[in-house]
Image (tube, rainbow, N blue to C red; front, top):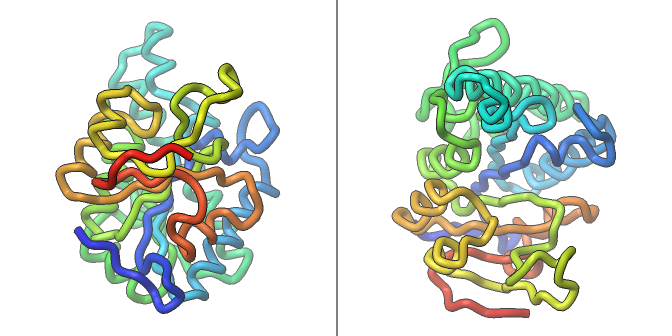
Amino acid sequence: MSATKSSTGGYKRVLLKLSGEALMGDDKYGINPEVLTGIAQQVLNLQKAGVQVALVIGGGNIFRGVQGATRGMDRASADYMGMLATCINSLAMQDALEQLGGQTRVLSAIKMEQIAEPYIRRRAVRHLEKERVVIFAAGTGNPYFTTDTAASLRAMEINADVILKATKVDGVYEADPKKVPTARRYRTLTYMDVLQKNLNVMDSTAISLCMDNKLPIVVFDMMATGNIERAVLRPGEIGTIVGHAETALV
């Protein structure tokens, strides 16, 4: 899948993957309104620049299915609870975007017609073409799959040019930079590098899906003001790009 560039030189259609924890900011739980508004504003700035934006948001700030399973819950039940947590975050993001004047649609993999449209691929693409921000909720709709995998799947279904994996670190490092201050950041990585080195980018299912479909992944720090826009409009300037390029350390 080749990446299509917008008139500004960046990507034309992107899928932004946010962890639920990213919405907490410095809080210990839930959603920080200032962080939410900051992300929403950057998304709308991208849209004004001619970029079509879709989002997948995790639910870890509210409930994580894996953690529930490790504490004795049935894994499937815990994962469904996690999917509902992603719906809460999706509705919060929708509200933040619309408060700023944006047009949005939440498409859920689990039917809940009162609050979201059911996920239909062609409908999602049409919303993007009509300059609406599309938020994919409830993961894949199936237990045992992460929102990373959901992001990879939805990105391929809508023919996105890239997955933007927003984190609290400015890229992928050869070791944990908090534990190893001298660790160097990778500028580029291949999919096999990520799998073989067991780097914490996305889960192996998500990476394999991207590799099979040649979908690039950009891992970057979302906490710096304006970085979401930089990652899209000036590719390669920040973060780590995962694709078929040769590995390079900064």
